[in-house]
Amino acid sequence: MTSSSQTKPLNDVFAAPLRDHAAQRAATDPAFRSLPDAFANRNRLHQYFLYTFVPRNLAWAFKPNNKAGSSSVLAFLFALEFGQPLSAEIANPFEQDTITHRLAEARLLARLPEHPDVSDAQAALGQCLRFTTVRHPASRALSGYFYICRAQQAGSEAFARHRLRMTALVGFDWARHIGTPDGFVRFLDWVAAEDALGGWMADAHFRPQTTNIRPEILRPDIIGRTEDFGSFYAEVCARLGRELPHSAMQPRNRQPKTDPTPFFTPEARARIASIFAADFAAFGYEPDRIEGVA
Image (tube, rainbow, N blue to C red; front, side, top):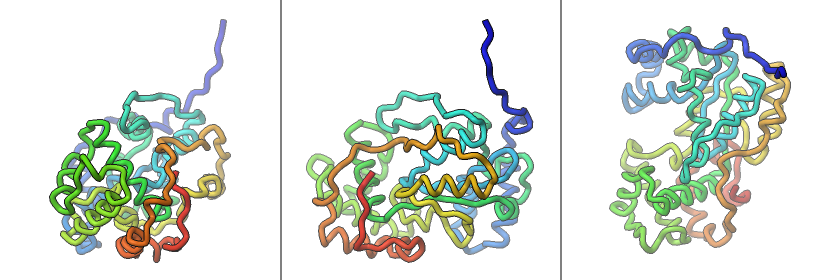
């Protein structure tokens, strides 16, 4: 009995061990010299480039934007590069879809400064097809709120220090406010408070999307909207001259659907418009037009 299989050419995957930390840091030194004031410190600049994924051939660069479909895009990119749907799983009652974030550990994708051929991360980025994703700031904020509440309910270590700070900074009571409209307003107040303190404790799941993407640095060729991933995937494939992998079109890591109406009070809407003003300006969303929460 025989079976058929498809083998990916070995030159399309990473064979060498992960480069050492010194080499990774050296790859972002040119960016630090050319962008000395773009980030609060040298480490934050390095982390920005480190959280950018590329394939072995450096044809594209994906900048994840947390709470904007990153898991779905990584699964799509896996199928695009390797011709098979991502079917491996990790049992995790809170995160649900952590396997997509193991692609770099598996040396199937690389974080940009880890790539063995990249000596200048900023220059390499400029030669790739660059893309990222965005989401309506209101639905993303509510999704982030449900996400941190779910961490509390699951007894997860995730966001433990952030949950402590929510209580200290805005009086969030995890026994009374979890999953409530009042709790959502307090969550928004906490996001604003962290930003006012310099943003050094802010998490990428909750802070403004412009802070994650830094469009003036990434200079994205394509910005995909989570509200229309089909068009986004089609454009990526068209720009790369590749066939669309229909096996990877289904969204991943979706939270349970919730009626957003009770949460989007006038008070919450005003806070969203203020806190995420840069996102509305950069990505063309309108504060008064709120898409449904995925």
